[in-house]
Image (cartoon, rainbow, N blue to C red):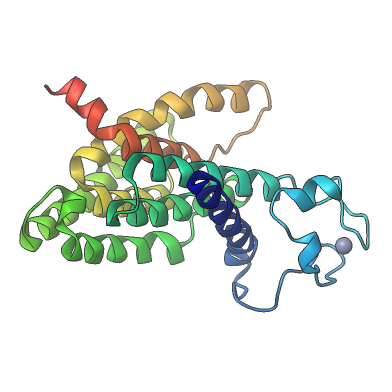
Length: 255
Ligand SMILES: [Zn+2]
């Protein structure tokens, strides 16, 4: 029963994340106006705005203009609800759960904006670095520390390590391939993750991301002939794995 409630709450948040994904890169307000069809601009009534269900009932088309609604709306709602539930099942309702949820929801927004526009908005990554540091100081346990000073230090080192690793990769990539391989957005995103999760997790994410990125990247490059492959989604996926199973993985690697 509680699982169902958590799942539904996740769906509602996912529905809001869809608004953020559409409006943030377009520099529109995420609060008003209310939901509109992106094609005919008609307001969407509440009964056509129910997560998952409305998309299925309308068969992915706007009721008014019958234009296709992006499958992204359905996917984001489902991913948000499932990841919210996984975090709840692993952490219960403590502060770690809420902070990891906040981070996960930010990463979902980052992932889908990066997939569509190949950018990671500073409004998320730069703001996220500061939020990560502030939350670490307020909840030292987030950094596995007991004092706020230690947590503050861990958070700063995490941001530098995360951002630094991707920055160095980019420099090496540039030397090797004579073109830009890592964007500044990825550097800031990894700095944000380091600020939230500390340097150990940042290093883990750095090494995990290619496991997700490489197979899809090779497919995109050689089958779909895409030249620009966003890296944010793989960093995000690796981060979620690190949040939920990172301590176990590190325990196995560094006994
Ligand atoms: Zn429409």
